[in-house]
Length: 334
Image (cartoon, rainbow, N blue to C red):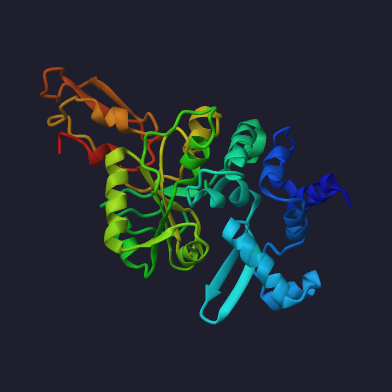
């Protein structure tokens, strides 16, 4: 089988995850060798034991363990350890080529080349199937505020209380900002990079495989504080169960905010239930909240109740606001 046939077989195995594009194959081949692509074609996408995979692959366990370990360190295979149970699964296409390998913050090949092709592919239809998605993969959670889910999804408590419930905390580089920072076609992000927080089982996988580092809860809170000061949006995985990731998202390069603002997607981040309330009498009309809002949901308008010299106060577009609290965090009127 030729290398081209091997890669094509891998694409077919991954199914709808790779829409047609001239940038698809360069992204894949820049990161995966033909041998690696051949090995992970047919690798289970649902977690299996090493014995089950050995039977599927018709390989001896010692040889199989070596291959799996190398691909786990590369960010291609996920290792789940729960007590005495160890299981493995293939990361999704989006995780392999857009997310996991960027967590270590590595500025070298083949990560740099994959980033370039992946960014081009991102703009050329890679996520078109998410354009009209009803429930995005991330939910906004404001710092220091208690929020509840507006839908049937998991109700999320105050983000600090959430962190207190974890027994293992880690931090990695923001995969979104790293991916664009590695591409000379895009300007570097001005925001902090080491801000992607992972916990418990996922955190242990990350540290074991050199994809991030362990941190204390105090360090976790400090990262959240710096992210909030910088105007980044805190986001949790939007699914039932205990979320193991807290993202700190920026307007320009975030996988969720960028499609909304630059690619015409119908929705960005699932909103929290945190509702911003404006007090016209104390509003200073300084405009800080307008500059910080990631959704362009705030405007200054004339208000007869305003007491500032401009006789203006901010108004909130509730249909656009995601309840992230970024505006409140630096408000001069509080």
